[in-house]
Image 1: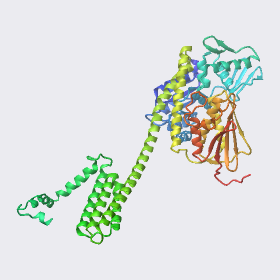
Image 2 (image 1 turned 90 degrees about the vertical axis):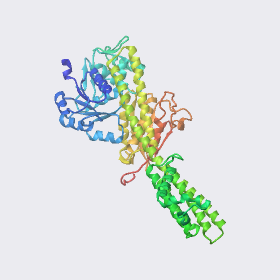
Image 3 (image 1 turned 30 degrees about the horizontal axis):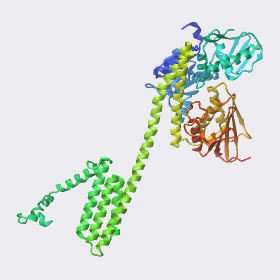
Image 4 (image 1 turned 180 degrees about the horizontal axis):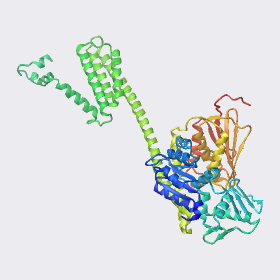
Length: 228
Length: 380
Protein backbone atom coordinates (compact mmCIF):
# COMPACT_ATOMS: atom_id res chain seq x y z
CA UNK A 1 0.00 0.00 0.00
CA UNK A 2 1.24 3.43 -0.87
CA UNK A 3 1.35 6.55 1.25
CA UNK A 4 -1.56 8.09 -0.57
CA UNK A 5 -3.81 5.39 0.82
CA UNK A 6 -2.95 6.07 4.44
CA UNK A 7 -5.43 8.93 4.24
CA UNK A 8 -7.94 6.82 2.36
CA UNK A 9 -11.27 5.82 3.85
CA UNK A 10 -10.85 2.53 5.70
CA UNK A 11 -13.52 -0.10 5.26
CA UNK A 12 -13.71 -3.23 7.41
CA UNK A 13 -15.52 -6.09 5.68
CA UNK A 14 -16.74 -9.21 7.50
CA UNK A 15 -18.18 -11.66 4.99
CA UNK A 16 -17.91 -15.44 4.93
CA UNK A 17 -18.79 -15.96 1.27
CA UNK A 18 -15.55 -15.98 -0.72
CA UNK A 19 -16.91 -14.50 -3.97
CA UNK A 20 -18.75 -11.66 -2.30
CA UNK A 21 -15.84 -10.90 0.02
CA UNK A 22 -13.27 -10.70 -2.75
CA UNK A 23 -15.56 -8.80 -5.08
CA UNK A 24 -16.53 -6.14 -2.53
CA UNK A 25 -12.93 -5.77 -1.37
CA UNK A 26 -11.72 -5.43 -4.94
CA UNK A 27 -14.38 -2.89 -5.91
CA UNK A 28 -13.79 -0.71 -2.87
CA UNK A 29 -10.02 -0.89 -3.30
CA UNK A 30 -10.48 0.09 -6.93
CA UNK A 31 -12.25 3.22 -5.74
CA UNK A 32 -9.43 4.17 -3.40
CA UNK A 33 -10.71 2.65 -0.15
CA UNK A 34 -8.34 0.81 2.13
CA UNK A 35 -10.06 -2.50 2.81
CA UNK A 36 -9.54 -5.17 5.43
CA UNK A 37 -11.59 -8.28 4.70
CA UNK A 38 -12.22 -10.98 7.31
CA UNK A 39 -14.14 -14.26 7.10
CA UNK A 40 -15.50 -14.13 10.64
CA UNK A 41 -15.42 -11.66 13.50
CA UNK A 42 -13.72 -13.94 15.97
CA UNK A 43 -10.84 -11.55 16.67
CA UNK A 44 -12.92 -8.43 16.12
CA UNK A 45 -11.66 -6.19 18.91
CA UNK A 46 -8.04 -6.76 17.87
CA UNK A 47 -8.88 -6.13 14.23
CA UNK A 48 -10.67 -2.89 15.05
CA UNK A 49 -7.74 -1.79 17.23
CA UNK A 50 -5.21 -2.47 14.49
CA UNK A 51 -7.15 -1.34 11.47
CA UNK A 52 -9.20 1.56 12.89
CA UNK A 53 -11.97 1.44 10.27
CA UNK A 54 -14.12 4.37 9.17
CA UNK A 55 -16.97 2.10 8.20
CA UNK A 56 -17.84 -1.57 8.76
CA UNK A 57 -19.67 -3.76 6.23
CA UNK A 58 -20.90 -6.86 8.03
CA UNK A 59 -22.64 -10.03 6.86
CA UNK A 60 -25.27 -11.09 9.40
CA UNK A 61 -25.03 -14.87 9.12
CA UNK A 62 -21.50 -16.00 9.82
CA UNK A 63 -20.30 -19.60 10.13
CA UNK A 64 -18.39 -19.14 13.38
CA UNK A 65 -18.00 -16.71 16.24
CA UNK A 66 -20.46 -13.93 17.04
CA UNK A 67 -23.17 -13.12 14.47
CA UNK A 68 -23.35 -9.86 12.53
CA UNK A 69 -25.63 -8.14 15.04
CA UNK A 70 -23.28 -8.86 17.92
CA UNK A 71 -20.31 -7.72 15.83
CA UNK A 72 -22.09 -4.50 14.92
CA UNK A 73 -22.73 -3.68 18.59
CA UNK A 74 -19.09 -4.42 19.34
CA UNK A 75 -17.74 -2.25 16.53
CA UNK A 76 -20.05 0.61 17.43
CA UNK A 77 -19.09 0.40 21.10
CA UNK A 78 -15.40 0.15 20.34
CA UNK A 79 -14.92 2.51 17.40
CA UNK A 80 -18.23 4.35 16.99
CA UNK A 81 -18.22 3.89 13.23
CA UNK A 82 -21.24 3.44 10.95
CA UNK A 83 -22.25 -0.12 10.06
CA UNK A 84 -23.84 -1.39 6.85
CA UNK A 85 -25.27 -4.92 6.96
CA UNK A 86 -25.09 -7.39 4.10
CA UNK A 87 -27.53 -10.26 4.22
CA UNK A 88 -29.44 -12.85 2.24
CA UNK A 89 -32.42 -12.60 4.63
CA UNK A 90 -34.90 -9.88 3.83
CA UNK A 91 -37.68 -10.58 6.31
CA UNK A 92 -39.01 -7.66 8.30
CA UNK A 93 -37.79 -9.17 11.56
CA UNK A 94 -34.25 -9.43 10.23
CA UNK A 95 -34.27 -5.86 9.06
CA UNK A 96 -35.63 -4.52 12.33
CA UNK A 97 -33.07 -6.56 14.24
CA UNK A 98 -30.40 -4.98 12.04
CA UNK A 99 -31.46 -1.46 12.89
CA UNK A 100 -31.91 -2.37 16.55
CA UNK A 101 -28.31 -3.56 16.60
CA UNK A 102 -27.34 -0.05 15.56
CA UNK A 103 -26.86 -0.68 11.85
CA UNK A 104 -27.00 2.44 9.68
CA UNK A 105 -28.15 0.66 6.56
CA UNK A 106 -29.04 -2.71 5.18
CA UNK A 107 -28.25 -4.20 1.76
CA UNK A 108 -29.95 -7.43 0.69
CA UNK A 109 -28.05 -9.96 -1.42
CA UNK A 110 -27.81 -10.12 -4.33
CA UNK A 111 -27.01 -6.42 -4.54
CA UNK A 112 -25.68 -4.11 -7.21
CA UNK A 113 -22.24 -2.79 -6.34
CA UNK A 114 -23.53 0.68 -7.20
CA UNK A 115 -26.11 0.36 -4.45
CA UNK A 116 -23.63 -0.81 -1.84
CA UNK A 117 -21.24 2.00 -2.83
CA UNK A 118 -24.01 4.57 -2.67
CA UNK A 119 -25.14 3.37 0.76
CA UNK A 120 -21.63 3.20 2.19
CA UNK A 121 -20.87 6.69 0.87
CA UNK A 122 -24.14 7.94 2.34
CA UNK A 123 -23.46 6.62 5.84
CA UNK A 124 -19.90 7.94 5.66
CA UNK A 125 -21.18 11.34 4.63
CA UNK A 126 -23.76 11.36 7.43
CA UNK A 127 -21.15 10.43 10.01
CA UNK A 128 -18.72 13.01 8.61
CA UNK A 129 -16.09 10.37 7.89
CA UNK A 130 -15.92 10.83 4.15
CA UNK A 131 -12.91 12.89 3.21
CA UNK A 132 -14.20 16.37 2.65
CA UNK A 133 -17.58 16.40 0.95
CA UNK A 134 -16.40 19.47 -0.97
CA UNK A 135 -14.17 19.06 -4.01
CA UNK A 136 -12.44 22.12 -5.42
CA UNK A 137 -10.66 21.86 -8.74
CA UNK A 138 -9.59 25.09 -10.46
CA UNK A 139 -12.72 27.19 -10.83
CA UNK A 140 -15.02 24.26 -10.07
CA UNK A 141 -16.55 23.60 -6.63
CA UNK A 142 -18.58 20.45 -5.93
CA UNK A 143 -20.42 20.25 -2.61
CA UNK A 144 -21.52 16.66 -2.06
CA UNK A 145 -23.67 17.52 0.97
CA UNK A 146 -25.61 20.37 -0.58
CA UNK A 147 -25.57 18.69 -4.00
CA UNK A 148 -24.38 21.97 -5.50
CA UNK A 149 -21.92 22.66 -8.28
CA UNK A 150 -20.43 26.09 -8.86
CA UNK A 151 -18.20 27.05 -11.74
CA UNK A 152 -16.51 30.44 -11.41
CA UNK A 153 -19.00 31.27 -8.67
CA UNK A 154 -22.02 30.51 -10.86
CA UNK A 155 -24.28 27.68 -9.70
CA UNK A 156 -24.94 25.05 -12.38
CA UNK A 157 -28.33 23.39 -12.64
CA UNK A 158 -27.39 19.71 -12.87
CA UNK A 159 -29.69 16.70 -12.69
CA UNK A 160 -28.89 14.20 -9.91
CA UNK A 161 -27.31 11.84 -12.45
CA UNK A 162 -25.16 14.57 -13.96
CA UNK A 163 -24.11 15.52 -10.46
CA UNK A 164 -23.06 11.96 -9.59
CA UNK A 165 -21.24 11.64 -12.89
CA UNK A 166 -19.24 14.82 -12.32
CA UNK A 167 -18.59 13.86 -8.71
CA UNK A 168 -17.17 10.44 -9.65
CA UNK A 169 -15.00 11.88 -12.45
CA UNK A 170 -13.73 14.86 -10.45
CA UNK A 171 -12.79 12.77 -7.40
CA UNK A 172 -10.21 10.97 -9.54
CA UNK A 173 -8.73 13.60 -11.89
CA UNK A 174 -6.80 12.25 -14.88
CA UNK A 175 -8.16 8.73 -14.36
CA UNK A 176 -9.92 7.34 -17.43
CA UNK A 177 -13.32 5.83 -16.65
CA UNK A 178 -14.89 3.45 -19.15
CA UNK A 179 -18.61 3.55 -19.78
CA UNK A 180 -18.98 0.28 -17.90
CA UNK A 181 -17.15 1.67 -14.89
CA UNK A 182 -19.41 4.71 -14.80
CA UNK A 183 -22.50 2.58 -15.27
CA UNK A 184 -21.56 0.21 -12.49
CA UNK A 185 -20.83 3.07 -10.09
CA UNK A 186 -23.71 5.38 -10.86
CA UNK A 187 -26.61 3.49 -12.38
CA UNK A 188 -26.30 -0.10 -11.33
CA UNK A 189 -29.60 -1.94 -11.13
CA UNK A 190 -31.28 -2.73 -14.38
CA UNK A 191 -30.47 0.41 -16.32
CA UNK A 192 -27.30 -0.92 -17.96
CA UNK A 193 -27.17 0.80 -21.31
CA UNK A 194 -23.92 2.40 -22.53
CA UNK A 195 -25.94 5.05 -24.40
CA UNK A 196 -27.12 6.36 -21.02
CA UNK A 197 -23.56 7.41 -20.28
CA UNK A 198 -23.11 9.21 -23.60
CA UNK A 199 -26.36 11.09 -23.21
CA UNK A 200 -25.60 12.25 -19.69
CA UNK A 201 -21.95 13.07 -20.38
CA UNK A 202 -22.89 15.26 -23.30
CA UNK A 203 -25.57 17.03 -21.23
CA UNK A 204 -23.09 17.54 -18.40
CA UNK A 205 -20.48 18.90 -20.81
CA UNK A 206 -22.92 21.38 -22.27
CA UNK A 207 -23.62 22.83 -18.83
CA UNK A 208 -19.98 22.80 -17.69
CA UNK A 209 -18.56 24.25 -20.92
CA UNK A 210 -20.95 27.21 -20.85
CA UNK A 211 -18.87 28.71 -18.06
CA UNK A 212 -15.30 27.82 -18.96
CA UNK A 213 -12.93 25.49 -20.81
CA UNK A 214 -13.70 21.79 -21.26
CA UNK A 215 -13.07 19.58 -18.18
CA UNK A 216 -14.60 16.24 -19.15
CA UNK A 217 -12.76 14.77 -22.13
CA UNK A 218 -13.40 11.72 -24.29
CA UNK A 219 -10.57 9.21 -24.63
CA UNK A 220 -11.36 7.45 -27.87
CA UNK A 221 -12.13 3.77 -27.38
CA UNK A 222 -11.52 3.93 -23.64
CA UNK A 223 -13.95 6.26 -21.96
CA UNK A 224 -14.01 9.62 -20.20
CA UNK A 225 -11.55 11.56 -18.08
CA UNK A 226 -11.68 14.67 -15.93
CA UNK A 227 -8.67 16.91 -16.73
CA UNK A 228 -8.40 20.03 -14.61
CA UNK B 1 -68.79 -74.39 21.56
CA UNK B 2 -69.10 -76.84 24.35
CA UNK B 3 -69.72 -79.55 21.78
CA UNK B 4 -66.54 -78.73 19.93
CA UNK B 5 -64.35 -78.50 23.00
CA UNK B 6 -64.94 -82.03 24.22
CA UNK B 7 -65.27 -84.63 21.43
CA UNK B 8 -63.83 -87.81 22.89
CA UNK B 9 -63.50 -89.58 19.55
CA UNK B 10 -64.15 -88.51 15.99
CA UNK B 11 -67.12 -90.77 15.45
CA UNK B 12 -69.19 -88.44 13.27
CA UNK B 13 -67.63 -86.88 10.15
CA UNK B 14 -69.29 -83.42 10.62
CA UNK B 15 -67.92 -83.32 14.15
CA UNK B 16 -64.43 -84.13 12.84
CA UNK B 17 -64.61 -81.14 10.56
CA UNK B 18 -65.11 -78.90 13.62
CA UNK B 19 -61.97 -80.21 15.31
CA UNK B 20 -60.14 -76.96 14.54
CA UNK B 21 -62.34 -75.27 17.16
CA UNK B 22 -60.31 -77.09 19.81
CA UNK B 23 -57.47 -74.72 19.10
CA UNK B 24 -59.65 -71.92 20.54
CA UNK B 25 -59.04 -73.34 23.97
CA UNK B 26 -55.64 -71.72 24.00
CA UNK B 27 -55.70 -67.94 23.58
CA UNK B 28 -53.44 -68.19 20.59
CA UNK B 29 -56.41 -67.46 18.31
CA UNK B 30 -56.69 -64.00 19.82
CA UNK B 31 -53.14 -63.25 18.80
CA UNK B 32 -53.83 -64.65 15.36
CA UNK B 33 -56.91 -62.48 14.99
CA UNK B 34 -54.98 -59.48 16.21
CA UNK B 35 -52.23 -60.14 13.67
CA UNK B 36 -54.74 -60.68 10.92
CA UNK B 37 -56.54 -57.41 11.54
CA UNK B 38 -53.24 -55.64 11.90
CA UNK B 39 -52.07 -57.07 8.63
CA UNK B 40 -55.29 -56.02 6.98
CA UNK B 41 -54.78 -52.50 8.25
CA UNK B 42 -51.03 -52.29 7.74
CA UNK B 43 -51.63 -52.57 4.04
CA UNK B 44 -49.77 -55.74 3.20
CA UNK B 45 -53.06 -56.44 1.42
CA UNK B 46 -54.37 -52.97 0.65
CA UNK B 47 -51.37 -50.68 0.63
CA UNK B 48 -50.48 -48.62 3.64
CA UNK B 49 -51.48 -45.08 4.57
CA UNK B 50 -51.51 -44.87 8.35
CA UNK B 51 -48.70 -44.68 10.85
CA UNK B 52 -48.01 -47.89 12.86
CA UNK B 53 -49.47 -46.50 16.11
CA UNK B 54 -52.61 -45.42 14.34
CA UNK B 55 -52.94 -48.86 12.79
CA UNK B 56 -52.71 -50.51 16.19
CA UNK B 57 -55.30 -48.16 17.67
CA UNK B 58 -57.60 -48.84 14.75
CA UNK B 59 -57.03 -52.58 15.01
CA UNK B 60 -57.75 -52.53 18.74
CA UNK B 61 -61.04 -50.75 18.13
CA UNK B 62 -62.03 -53.17 15.38
CA UNK B 63 -61.30 -56.19 17.56
CA UNK B 64 -62.97 -54.66 20.63
CA UNK B 65 -66.17 -53.72 18.88
CA UNK B 66 -66.18 -57.09 17.14
CA UNK B 67 -66.01 -58.90 20.48
CA UNK B 68 -68.74 -56.68 21.93
CA UNK B 69 -70.92 -57.30 18.87
CA UNK B 70 -70.45 -61.07 19.01
CA UNK B 71 -71.40 -61.12 22.70
CA UNK B 72 -74.45 -59.00 21.92
CA UNK B 73 -75.54 -61.35 19.13
CA UNK B 74 -74.96 -64.44 21.25
CA UNK B 75 -76.92 -63.16 24.23
CA UNK B 76 -79.87 -61.73 22.29
CA UNK B 77 -79.68 -58.61 24.39
CA UNK B 78 -79.47 -56.15 21.55
CA UNK B 79 -81.77 -53.21 21.84
CA UNK B 80 -83.61 -51.48 19.05
CA UNK B 81 -81.62 -50.85 15.92
CA UNK B 82 -81.45 -47.10 16.47
CA UNK B 83 -79.76 -47.40 19.86
CA UNK B 84 -77.36 -49.89 18.26
CA UNK B 85 -76.63 -47.26 15.67
CA UNK B 86 -75.77 -44.76 18.37
CA UNK B 87 -73.67 -47.39 20.09
CA UNK B 88 -71.66 -48.06 16.95
CA UNK B 89 -71.49 -44.50 15.76
CA UNK B 90 -69.10 -43.56 18.55
CA UNK B 91 -66.38 -46.22 18.06
CA UNK B 92 -66.65 -45.79 14.31
CA UNK B 93 -66.09 -42.04 14.55
CA UNK B 94 -63.23 -42.44 17.01
CA UNK B 95 -61.69 -45.24 14.96
CA UNK B 96 -61.86 -43.16 11.82
CA UNK B 97 -60.38 -40.13 13.45
CA UNK B 98 -57.50 -42.03 15.00
CA UNK B 99 -56.90 -44.70 12.41
CA UNK B 100 -57.87 -43.12 9.13
CA UNK B 101 -60.18 -44.34 6.40
CA UNK B 102 -59.38 -48.04 6.42
CA UNK B 103 -60.06 -48.94 10.08
CA UNK B 104 -63.05 -46.63 9.90
CA UNK B 105 -64.49 -48.50 6.93
CA UNK B 106 -63.87 -51.82 8.67
CA UNK B 107 -65.66 -50.56 11.78
CA UNK B 108 -68.57 -49.32 9.73
CA UNK B 109 -68.82 -52.61 7.87
CA UNK B 110 -68.63 -54.57 11.08
CA UNK B 111 -71.20 -52.37 12.83
CA UNK B 112 -73.63 -52.67 9.98
CA UNK B 113 -73.27 -56.43 9.73
CA UNK B 114 -73.53 -57.12 13.43
CA UNK B 115 -76.55 -54.84 13.75
CA UNK B 116 -78.19 -56.71 10.92
CA UNK B 117 -77.39 -60.05 12.52
CA UNK B 118 -78.53 -58.84 15.94
CA UNK B 119 -81.74 -57.45 14.51
CA UNK B 120 -82.32 -60.77 12.78
CA UNK B 121 -82.01 -62.69 16.01
CA UNK B 122 -84.16 -60.37 18.06
CA UNK B 123 -87.72 -61.67 17.85
CA UNK B 124 -89.63 -58.43 18.20
CA UNK B 125 -90.51 -57.61 14.61
CA UNK B 126 -90.25 -58.60 11.00
CA UNK B 127 -86.63 -59.66 10.27
CA UNK B 128 -86.73 -58.11 6.81
CA UNK B 129 -87.26 -54.66 8.30
CA UNK B 130 -84.25 -55.16 10.53
CA UNK B 131 -82.10 -56.31 7.65
CA UNK B 132 -83.05 -53.18 5.74
CA UNK B 133 -82.37 -51.09 8.83
CA UNK B 134 -78.97 -52.69 9.15
CA UNK B 135 -78.10 -51.95 5.53
CA UNK B 136 -79.27 -48.39 5.97
CA UNK B 137 -77.12 -48.03 9.05
CA UNK B 138 -74.17 -49.44 7.13
CA UNK B 139 -74.61 -46.82 4.45
CA UNK B 140 -74.96 -43.97 6.93
CA UNK B 141 -71.87 -45.09 8.78
CA UNK B 142 -69.86 -45.46 5.57
CA UNK B 143 -70.71 -41.94 4.47
CA UNK B 144 -69.81 -40.66 7.91
CA UNK B 145 -66.50 -42.51 7.79
CA UNK B 146 -65.68 -41.15 4.38
CA UNK B 147 -66.52 -37.58 5.42
CA UNK B 148 -64.56 -37.64 8.66
CA UNK B 149 -61.58 -39.34 7.08
CA UNK B 150 -61.51 -37.03 4.09
CA UNK B 151 -61.76 -33.91 6.25
CA UNK B 152 -59.06 -35.11 8.57
CA UNK B 153 -56.69 -36.15 5.79
CA UNK B 154 -57.24 -32.88 3.98
CA UNK B 155 -56.53 -30.82 7.09
CA UNK B 156 -53.36 -32.75 7.85
CA UNK B 157 -52.17 -32.58 4.24
CA UNK B 158 -52.93 -28.86 3.93
CA UNK B 159 -51.05 -28.03 7.11
CA UNK B 160 -48.11 -30.13 6.04
CA UNK B 161 -47.86 -28.78 2.53
CA UNK B 162 -48.20 -25.12 3.57
CA UNK B 163 -45.47 -25.53 6.14
CA UNK B 164 -43.26 -27.49 3.78
CA UNK B 165 -43.74 -24.98 0.99
CA UNK B 166 -42.86 -22.12 3.29
CA UNK B 167 -39.77 -23.82 4.60
CA UNK B 168 -38.74 -24.84 1.13
CA UNK B 169 -39.19 -21.31 -0.19
CA UNK B 170 -37.15 -19.62 2.48
CA UNK B 171 -34.49 -22.29 2.20
CA UNK B 172 -34.36 -22.04 -1.59
CA UNK B 173 -34.27 -18.26 -1.41
CA UNK B 174 -31.36 -18.19 0.94
CA UNK B 175 -29.45 -20.85 -0.94
CA UNK B 176 -29.97 -19.16 -4.29
CA UNK B 177 -29.27 -15.65 -3.09
CA UNK B 178 -25.77 -16.38 -1.91
CA UNK B 179 -24.33 -17.63 -5.21
CA UNK B 180 -26.25 -14.96 -7.13
CA UNK B 181 -24.75 -12.33 -4.86
CA UNK B 182 -21.31 -13.73 -5.62
CA UNK B 183 -21.84 -13.59 -9.37
CA UNK B 184 -23.31 -10.11 -9.28
CA UNK B 185 -20.68 -8.67 -6.95
CA UNK B 186 -17.78 -10.19 -8.89
CA UNK B 187 -19.10 -8.88 -12.18
CA UNK B 188 -19.67 -5.42 -10.76
CA UNK B 189 -16.24 -5.39 -9.16
CA UNK B 190 -14.61 -6.14 -12.52
CA UNK B 191 -16.62 -3.33 -14.08
CA UNK B 192 -15.78 -0.86 -11.33
CA UNK B 193 -12.10 -1.61 -11.74
CA UNK B 194 -12.23 -1.26 -15.51
CA UNK B 195 -11.92 -3.75 -18.36
CA UNK B 196 -11.35 -3.71 -22.11
CA UNK B 197 -14.36 -2.65 -24.10
CA UNK B 198 -15.05 -6.19 -25.28
CA UNK B 199 -14.78 -7.66 -21.79
CA UNK B 200 -16.89 -4.82 -20.58
CA UNK B 201 -19.74 -5.66 -22.93
CA UNK B 202 -19.76 -9.25 -21.67
CA UNK B 203 -19.51 -8.15 -18.06
CA UNK B 204 -22.41 -5.77 -18.50
CA UNK B 205 -24.48 -8.65 -19.88
CA UNK B 206 -23.42 -10.90 -17.02
CA UNK B 207 -24.29 -8.29 -14.45
CA UNK B 208 -27.63 -7.56 -16.05
CA UNK B 209 -28.58 -11.24 -16.17
CA UNK B 210 -27.52 -11.82 -12.56
CA UNK B 211 -29.58 -8.80 -11.60
CA UNK B 212 -32.61 -10.13 -13.46
CA UNK B 213 -32.29 -13.53 -11.82
CA UNK B 214 -32.03 -11.88 -8.41
CA UNK B 215 -35.07 -9.69 -8.94
CA UNK B 216 -37.09 -12.59 -10.29
CA UNK B 217 -36.18 -14.62 -7.22
CA UNK B 218 -37.29 -11.81 -4.91
CA UNK B 219 -40.54 -11.40 -6.81
CA UNK B 220 -41.37 -15.09 -6.70
CA UNK B 221 -40.78 -15.13 -2.96
CA UNK B 222 -42.91 -12.08 -2.42
CA UNK B 223 -45.70 -13.52 -4.54
CA UNK B 224 -45.57 -16.75 -2.54
CA UNK B 225 -45.78 -14.79 0.71
CA UNK B 226 -48.73 -12.80 -0.57
CA UNK B 227 -50.46 -16.04 -1.60
CA UNK B 228 -50.03 -17.32 1.92
CA UNK B 229 -51.58 -14.12 3.24
CA UNK B 230 -48.43 -12.94 4.97
CA UNK B 231 -48.61 -9.17 5.08
CA UNK B 232 -47.51 -8.61 8.64
CA UNK B 233 -49.32 -6.94 11.51
CA UNK B 234 -50.94 -3.52 11.43
CA UNK B 235 -48.78 -0.78 12.90
CA UNK B 236 -49.35 2.89 13.59
CA UNK B 237 -47.57 4.42 10.61
CA UNK B 238 -46.81 7.89 9.33
CA UNK B 239 -47.78 7.51 5.68
CA UNK B 240 -45.90 10.61 4.55
CA UNK B 241 -42.68 9.36 6.15
CA UNK B 242 -43.21 5.96 4.60
CA UNK B 243 -43.60 7.49 1.14
CA UNK B 244 -40.58 9.72 1.59
CA UNK B 245 -38.39 6.78 2.64
CA UNK B 246 -39.44 4.73 -0.36
CA UNK B 247 -38.90 7.65 -2.72
CA UNK B 248 -35.40 8.08 -1.31
CA UNK B 249 -34.70 4.41 -1.87
CA UNK B 250 -35.91 4.68 -5.45
CA UNK B 251 -33.64 7.68 -5.92
CA UNK B 252 -30.56 5.69 -4.90
CA UNK B 253 -31.52 3.24 -7.64
CA UNK B 254 -31.79 5.76 -10.40
CA UNK B 255 -30.46 9.27 -10.34
CA UNK B 256 -31.76 10.09 -13.78
CA UNK B 257 -35.38 10.56 -12.79
CA UNK B 258 -36.60 13.42 -10.62
CA UNK B 259 -38.91 12.42 -7.80
CA UNK B 260 -41.30 14.52 -5.80
CA UNK B 261 -43.71 14.01 -2.92
CA UNK B 262 -46.91 16.03 -2.68
CA UNK B 263 -49.14 16.05 0.40
CA UNK B 264 -52.69 16.96 -0.58
CA UNK B 265 -54.66 18.75 2.16
CA UNK B 266 -53.64 18.49 5.81
CA UNK B 267 -50.87 16.03 6.59
CA UNK B 268 -52.48 12.63 7.38
CA UNK B 269 -52.37 11.48 10.99
CA UNK B 270 -50.84 8.21 12.11
CA UNK B 271 -52.77 5.36 10.54
CA UNK B 272 -52.93 1.63 11.25
CA UNK B 273 -51.59 -0.34 8.28
CA UNK B 274 -49.25 -3.19 7.38
CA UNK B 275 -46.31 -0.87 6.91
CA UNK B 276 -43.83 -3.34 5.47
CA UNK B 277 -46.36 -4.63 2.95
CA UNK B 278 -47.33 -1.08 2.02
CA UNK B 279 -43.67 -0.15 1.60
CA UNK B 280 -43.06 -3.12 -0.67
CA UNK B 281 -46.15 -2.35 -2.73
CA UNK B 282 -45.08 1.26 -3.09
CA UNK B 283 -41.54 0.20 -3.97
CA UNK B 284 -42.91 -1.98 -6.78
CA UNK B 285 -45.05 0.89 -8.08
CA UNK B 286 -42.09 3.27 -7.94
CA UNK B 287 -39.89 0.76 -9.71
CA UNK B 288 -42.49 0.50 -12.43
CA UNK B 289 -42.87 4.28 -12.60
CA UNK B 290 -39.18 5.07 -12.89
CA UNK B 291 -38.75 2.51 -15.65
CA UNK B 292 -41.39 4.27 -17.71
CA UNK B 293 -40.84 7.87 -16.65
CA UNK B 294 -39.23 10.29 -19.06
CA UNK B 295 -37.99 12.64 -16.36
CA UNK B 296 -40.26 12.67 -13.34
CA UNK B 297 -42.08 10.46 -10.83
CA UNK B 298 -44.63 12.00 -8.47
CA UNK B 299 -46.17 10.52 -5.34
CA UNK B 300 -49.23 12.24 -3.94
CA UNK B 301 -50.52 11.44 -0.46
CA UNK B 302 -53.96 12.42 0.79
CA UNK B 303 -56.54 11.32 3.32
CA UNK B 304 -60.31 11.24 3.48
CA UNK B 305 -62.11 10.25 6.69
CA UNK B 306 -62.51 6.76 5.21
CA UNK B 307 -59.38 6.20 3.15
CA UNK B 308 -55.68 6.95 2.94
CA UNK B 309 -54.81 7.58 -0.69
CA UNK B 310 -51.39 7.27 -2.27
CA UNK B 311 -51.12 8.04 -5.99
CA UNK B 312 -48.02 7.19 -8.02
CA UNK B 313 -47.68 8.91 -11.39
CA UNK B 314 -44.95 9.22 -13.99
CA UNK B 315 -44.62 11.35 -17.11
CA UNK B 316 -44.16 8.32 -19.36
CA UNK B 317 -46.51 7.15 -22.10
CA UNK B 318 -48.97 5.48 -19.69
CA UNK B 319 -50.74 2.17 -20.17
CA UNK B 320 -52.11 1.11 -23.56
CA UNK B 321 -55.90 1.03 -23.95
CA UNK B 322 -57.52 -1.82 -22.05
CA UNK B 323 -54.44 -2.35 -19.92
CA UNK B 324 -55.98 -0.99 -16.72
CA UNK B 325 -56.73 -4.41 -15.31
CA UNK B 326 -54.50 -6.55 -17.48
CA UNK B 327 -51.45 -4.89 -15.99
CA UNK B 328 -52.31 -6.52 -12.64
CA UNK B 329 -52.36 -10.03 -14.10
CA UNK B 330 -49.50 -12.29 -13.21
CA UNK B 331 -46.66 -12.74 -15.69
CA UNK B 332 -48.13 -10.07 -17.93
CA UNK B 333 -45.60 -7.46 -19.04
CA UNK B 334 -47.29 -4.85 -21.22
CA UNK B 335 -44.17 -2.86 -22.11
CA UNK B 336 -42.42 -5.82 -23.75
CA UNK B 337 -39.23 -5.00 -21.85
CA UNK B 338 -39.08 -8.46 -20.37
CA UNK B 339 -40.01 -7.62 -16.80
CA UNK B 340 -41.13 -10.50 -14.59
CA UNK B 341 -44.75 -9.38 -14.75
CA UNK B 342 -45.00 -9.87 -11.00
CA UNK B 343 -44.33 -6.42 -9.53
CA UNK B 344 -47.81 -4.98 -9.97
CA UNK B 345 -49.75 -8.16 -9.05
CA UNK B 346 -47.63 -8.39 -5.90
CA UNK B 347 -48.34 -4.74 -5.10
CA UNK B 348 -52.05 -5.32 -5.52
CA UNK B 349 -51.91 -8.48 -3.37
CA UNK B 350 -50.08 -6.64 -0.59
CA UNK B 351 -52.62 -3.82 -0.56
CA UNK B 352 -55.72 -6.01 -0.85
CA UNK B 353 -54.52 -8.30 1.93
CA UNK B 354 -54.90 -5.39 4.36
CA UNK B 355 -58.34 -4.44 3.11
CA UNK B 356 -57.22 -1.81 0.60
CA UNK B 357 -57.45 -1.41 -3.16
CA UNK B 358 -54.92 -0.75 -5.91
CA UNK B 359 -56.18 0.46 -9.27
CA UNK B 360 -54.97 2.31 -12.33
CA UNK B 361 -57.06 5.40 -13.05
CA UNK B 362 -56.44 8.82 -14.58
CA UNK B 363 -52.99 7.74 -15.79
CA UNK B 364 -51.76 6.90 -12.33
CA UNK B 365 -51.68 4.06 -9.84
CA UNK B 366 -53.91 4.68 -6.84
CA UNK B 367 -53.52 2.92 -3.50
CA UNK B 368 -56.48 3.22 -1.14
CA UNK B 369 -56.14 1.82 2.35
CA UNK B 370 -58.84 2.10 5.04
CA UNK B 371 -58.07 5.05 7.32
CA UNK B 372 -57.87 3.13 10.58
CA UNK B 373 -56.60 5.41 13.28
CA UNK B 374 -54.79 3.98 16.31
CA UNK B 375 -56.47 6.45 18.71
CA UNK B 376 -59.53 8.66 18.29
CA UNK B 377 -58.53 11.83 16.47
CA UNK B 378 -60.92 14.73 15.87
CA UNK B 379 -61.84 14.87 12.18
CA UNK B 380 -61.49 18.31 10.60
